[in-house]
Length: 284
Image (cartoon, one colour):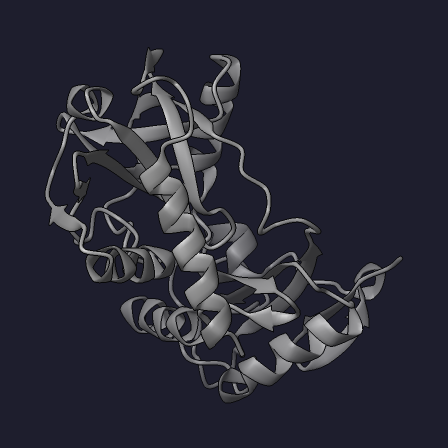
């Protein structure tokens, strides 16, 4: 079945949607994006994703598209026409296609942003628990990881390095300390304490991260936001990652070192249950 996608004000079959070769996302990775999960046909954490999208646009001095205030309705319409019960909605906004290649930003008065949205159908998304084996790699991304841009080459390379090593994903390390996963925030649990890196320009300000930490505190778990090493995480009782598409996903080994008894940890799984339960209550 051909998906219906959204491109610059139109709902189109995916086979008919075209973007200019001069679009700055293609030439300069000059674009931002968000991914919102869909459960029971409803959007999870949409408001958080919309606020982060606005922040990303502001940080890059990128104009809002004319449809910005209609993004919720566009998401809902794509979920409806593509019959998505469980899945994802991908949104990308670029600085547009000025008609030729130039390092200088185009004049926003004459160059409209490009807006693309599409869905991905993921039946069983909420039930899928695939514990992760993690490797560590050097973090060689640009310095503004807090802006959710389309500059995803190095994270993609990190995932391929993990695959080549027989693992599932990679945690990136800068100056001896873990920053985050290739497409997720990273945590470990020791006793009743969750440890994760504090917010800064060095990591993405995860929407799922914020919700999970709030729920953890409400469940009387201690949360410590600070730098930590791979070695410290290897000595933990449990570890996990969070993201919009994986929710809370347990980690069972790091650089070949098994965590605990090598099984999925009970606290990580409980956090996953709480997140899904509470997020569904607030879904729109």
